[in-house]
View 1: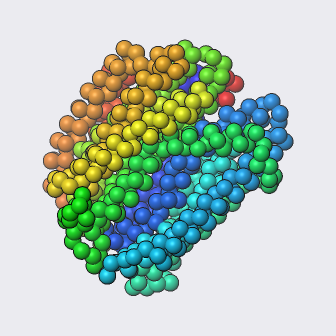
View 2 (view 1 turned 30 degrees about the horizontal axis):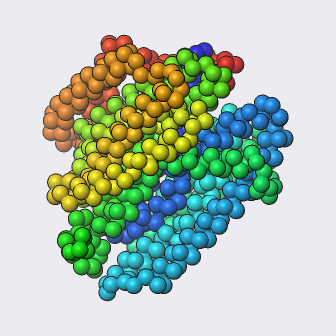
View 3 (view 1 turned 60 degrees about the vertical axis):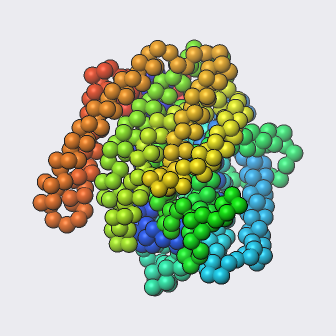
Length: 555
């Protein structure tokens, strides 16, 4: 089996598990939105979840794997499981102490802000909800980082399933919290219910770790605790982890900064209508529910990103690293090129349908109970611009893995540091326009992520001394664009034809499902069919039914 087929086969296994977690995560977010509505309570919960969620995105979606997989794999091959287990024990001890100290410092900082920060009349309740939810969920940061480390070790052992399923535990706990525990403990008290939901997040972190332990034991590794902070290998791993996490986290940091700016520029309940700005006062550009709108739109673009591309990048990283370690640069460039093309192919497909079907998708998933038509329009408006950026989001993960396979964590970090100020500046300019508002965050992310990919690809080729982009690659992009245009045209045509017919179906969910899923399925079919006619190899890689065993070279 070719290395690329091996990577795609592993990616399919990861994607299957990830699909379950993403579906349950989508259900979780839909239930939260429908239960609380796009109001300040939901905004405060999402803000409080930002810090632990930032660490999840930085460490849990690839950084731990990118750093620890090469080192642990080499140690397993050369020195055996005993040496690998000792390194795991030393790493785990140092990581836990560092994270626990971080949590304590942040909790003390929140306490100081609560006590010392002056507050305007009427704002006390809004600020108290914001700080208390953040304080409750901070410990989740510790458990999610430990989980990321253990998941990276499982990847070294060739076990991808437990780590891919761990998010399901979080989603189920939160669904139980929002549907039953919250209303049960705090009936008719939305503030109390959202605090119960926050505590289920903390409980889920512990349960996630318990889920992956049996897989570690079956792989011959037992958790231990060895406090040796001066161990050179551990110190090198943790030093490398920081720039890798930061460099890989351009999207994560963009999302985090978006949340901070969004809350800052949103008018809270019972507050003044104006905000100080450049020495004067102006009306708040955003209204209550802005962060919830942004979060719901981000959820919808992150769903295909997580299912398709992050799993692909996770499976491709070992292959990139092996070829780079052997100095086989022609093969390395071919592997990166094909994986990058496949990621962009998936991004163009998902982004195209996201743009055309933004409103029907949001309506089908969210518009029930306290979530109204106006909320749907706000979220769909933002989602369109995230759809335009999907190709860049997908490509970014592969380009980053290319750098990490070369042992270069500094370049992605430098690119990230360079585009973040531009991202913030663009947002602060665009958010004041009435026709843009919350979409300013998506537009700035679109522009800066695209720039990051282009700059990263240029530098990656120079650093590796091998050409990733060639004429066939550019020709393939044009074919993908042509397939996207035809798929969009067909989906748009169906959008105008199907709704009147769908109204014959009783109820609300049935007509909405028909007007959304039929154009979605047909548009996907058209995209793949046109891609096949244009002989894009990505179609066969995605749809291949081959079930041959992975060769020794692909393991």
